[in-house]
Image 1 (tube, rainbow, N blue to C red):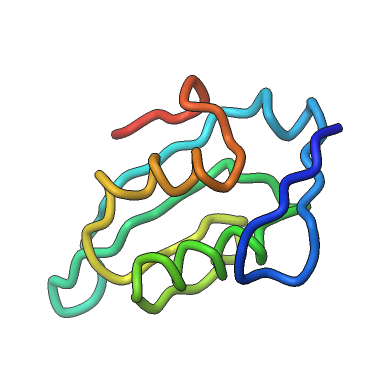
Image 2: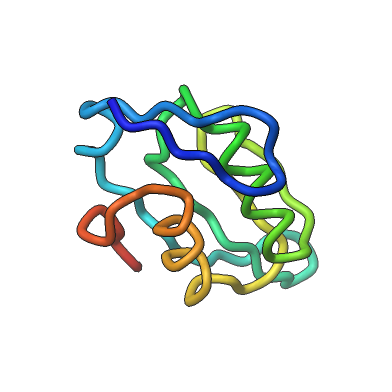
Length: 98
């Protein structure tokens, strides 16, 4: 288990091996009124809220967590999200840009 301390957040985030072995899919889709949103799925339910809060803060955008466990960010952030997730503690091999 690896503990990662992220500046601006009060507690350390725990990553277990099972969380790191998952594939994270990053893609854009069109929402209402032809607005682009970035969807990140496969993050894992354990750190889902912390990851969403971290991404929204770093990208200065709004967003939400869908019922299926996907993070939806307002705007096209497909190119910036992998770098931020890597900074958060995920490995680059996990990312799948669609």
